Image (cartoon, rainbow, N blue to C red; front, side, top):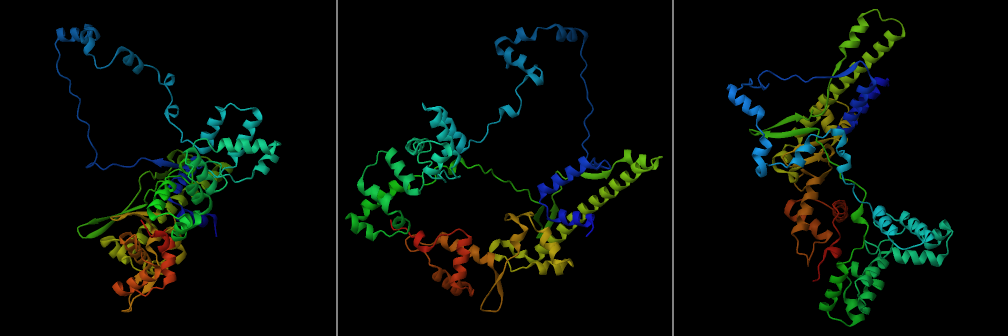
Length: 459
């Protein structure tokens, strides 16, 4: 493939933000390319009204120039003298915008701040920094005390002492080596010394997770109400103390296409906001027509071809994206009218045959692209889903079945949750959908729904 064709294919699969970054980079590197001014039609152009000044007499003009307005307003002035003075300060003397921003606190920074405030020796501070450097995003220690002692060339007893001290920093339980140790530290700091509670956390976390309560009642010889009180205390603890200091920032999605409903039909609008209007530079085009010869002329010709190919590729990308979304709207009209429960089975080949393009082109143009629909912003890949057979010979989309399963679980009785077999039977009975139990389990795992044994609420 030619470099130009490779560039066109690359532009197809770029997300909106990546595309804007690529175009801005090309504007910096290619002198023949520049950003044009978007034209405004005369009917939409807002004409500023002509400035009209009222006639002022000579006496009034003198009064306006000589009046001591500050003393006249006195205490009734809406701005103090200090504020008025600050408003006239030079911009370079004011605080920068970056200095007024607050950074997101990190777990490492929060712990190092507490470590610096502690009354410890330089060796203990070095050990503490090594411990903090070996924590994962949830706050658990990913190394052993022996490894940290070897790394810092310190006695093992001193490392264990610093680890014990660090585990009682805020958040309590950080630097623990297991969930059991993390919860026990939190119970200690809460002053909980009930032997049954400590045994439940120390020896029976797996039983609690799998809701095996009857053996616990027999072992500790307690009633269900007493066990519930213990479980309420355990559930108030935080098994992931460092999770609230996660370093991952929120990723915001900007849709590439908008689909609006208008008078019973759907209108497709491309999102060109922020995408510059490209044009060839008139300045360098004039140089090419003048007596520019040799390497300079070849350089300008090469950059001109590159700029023209980029503009053509961008136009082709937007045109292909429009045609794909238009085809999706035709195939998935039920979704745009009624929602995810009406999503039909669809594969890339169906859209490729409809718009007479290659299947790989459809795959690339639907990668990292988002569309704003009447039912929310979704990725274009969302509309392509496998099919499940129904008794009448028709098919239903897998995403529709997932939505039905999610709705069933949200409306179930918490004390008698649906098993996978029950969900499959209900789908067969109510919707005539032929689905196996293992398929229900797979869809449930994709949706992040626990098994029935973990969803069951005894209390």
